[in-house]
Image (cartoon, rainbow, N blue to C red):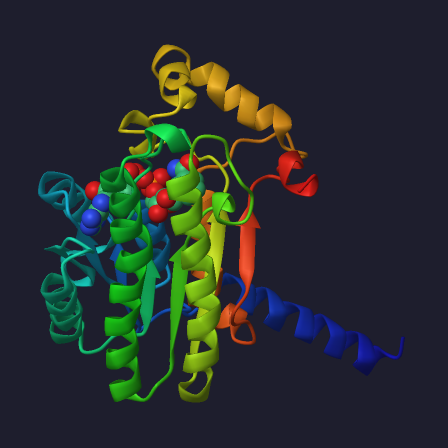
Length: 292
Ligand code: NAD
């Protein structure tokens, strides 16, 4: 190489190395997010991921004690000013509206909604009471409707677009035994997301879905009311159950709350600026899904 050209290359390599060492601007700086179920496994991991990218986060959950713990933990990691919490039942229309207003007042707007609050409560069809069916529909299907409607109102008024992320379930696409109420409610979340993607596009509001497969670590729903056979297996042999899910996946890996959080972050951020009405399955390649 001629001497000048060699010098130029060395110069640009040094400049590039300098750039690599400089702190990168955070991708969600200045954005405001509301995360429902923010005191749970997937919700708190997602809140942490959004906070790590510079977003301000309002945690919303029905569990007041867990909410206070999560808020304190996240404030310790990311700063008192970046995180707040509000107690909210997703089935309560007025409380949902108030929580969104709180987020907008505390942080000056709303750019991201992660609709994630949920339960796992199901039974074989002949044992599925109307109460159990309605509970699934109220918290999952209607809850997702209520929170996304409030987020849409705020985002439309703000006029800056936005991103709505639904944490649904692979059970919303693939049937699961003894869980018809849960599966049907989760399917309705996925379809609601597609409908809202159509409605939001004109205002720059994107709506996408993350479908987790079983996430045992850190999730409270696996120790609650999950009424089919898996509950007793869980109580006696959690490791065995986790191994079963791991083995049936193509990648032979367990799905963790942080894996769902990463997909939710991708959908919440401009990394997915050209995606709406889409689904990301985070299931380590669940083999069952390929047979349906
Ligand atoms: P989790 O139980 O750890 O968290 C759920 C949170 O939602 C809890 O903090 C709970 O208090 C809150 N919540 C429940 N009912 C509420 C209500 N009426 N109003 C407000 N908050 C309420 O469970 P998770 O695993 O973190 O689940 C998060 C989401 O992921 C749920 O929608 C769940 O269906 C979905 N999901 C989970 C799995 C899994 O295996 N963990 C798999 C697929 C989908």
